[in-house]
Image (cartoon, rainbow, N blue to C red; front, side, top):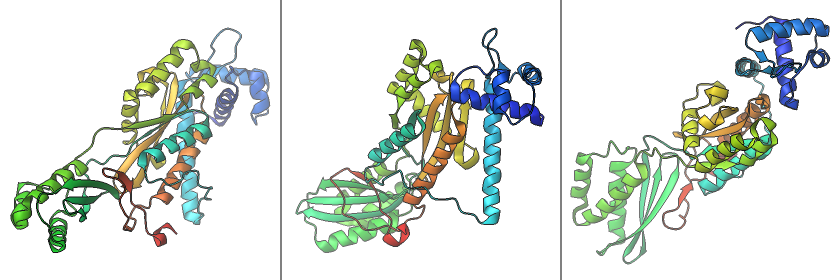
Amino acid sequence: MELDERKSKILKAIIQNYQETGEPVGSRTISKYSDLSLSSATIRNEMSDLEEMGLIVQPHTSAGRVPTDLAYRMYVDQLMKEDREKENEKAELSVPDQKSDFLIKRMDRMELMLEQVARIVADKTNYAAMVSSPRINQTKLKFIQLSRVDEYKLLMVLVVEGNIIRNKIFDIHEDLRDQDILSLNLLLNSNLNGLTMDEINLGVITHLTEQAGVHKDIVNRVLEEVAKAIRPDHSVEVYTSGATNIFKYPELSDNETASEILDTFEEKKQLAKALSDGLKADGHQGIRVYIGDETPVDSMKDCSIVTATYELSDGLKGTIGIVGPKRMDYPKVMKTLETLMQQLNAIFPKVPELEKKEPDAEGDVNIVEPAEDEKE
């Protein structure tokens, strides 16, 4: 739908004023806020046209107008178009973005870092935030190391795609020399590195067990752990924060609406689906905006959801989502997500150099630190 310049400016003024106040917007208000030198009568005529086009509605007699979902969609699409044009101009002029101070602190425990991200997003935007755990559909094995804990225990360290470390201590029932452990490490890495679960077929397993000889039981234990570590994981953990922020917005704070939204944040199943859909986003910088009935969560049809895809390392992706009223401050929300993406990219380079690191307790999952020169 194409609008002339006058209608575009009036519609933008209505949306921005309604975002700030939550109150229906009248022609007199628009005459003060817009940069058009028009009378209230002229603005009323233009608003009447906008109403016929389905872009604004009058909630009740003698009230001002409020934007419709279609108006918000046009507004958001225009914002994203302008953002792309700005990015292109910066690229042509070689003007880098100004780096903001880091809001995110790197943490070894992934769940703590994602909880932190959700909390920061909720605090910064005053809306509800949700973050999905990252997942990989076809994880590749990068490195295996066996080392002795004591006479009858081995520590196995697996490094998988995304530079995630998984540790496992298991019992052994045979004598192993240091040379035997070295030979097993060489055998496992030369045959398994770079393979996905689908590629570790019966032929690979048979060859490994034959080459391992008397140590085939140890190889079988390693293969079991490798299968657990790189099996495609379709489950999604969701971390949330700021759900009670919805009470700040009258249109969402009536008992029934608020209760449904809070129940959704508590139960999380529908949130996981919305965030999984966000991974398929084709919007600018991976940002996707759902408005009203577009939202994939039934209890949030009176809301807008903005999602962005983050990537901790090659192939390791998840989604950050922000939930608020349809009159949310879209420019601020999208800028917040863009900034977070930049910070995560800086904290987690896409191809970091692995730094050898002592593992934590058995079963811990850590993110491998990049080397110092890579951080700089």
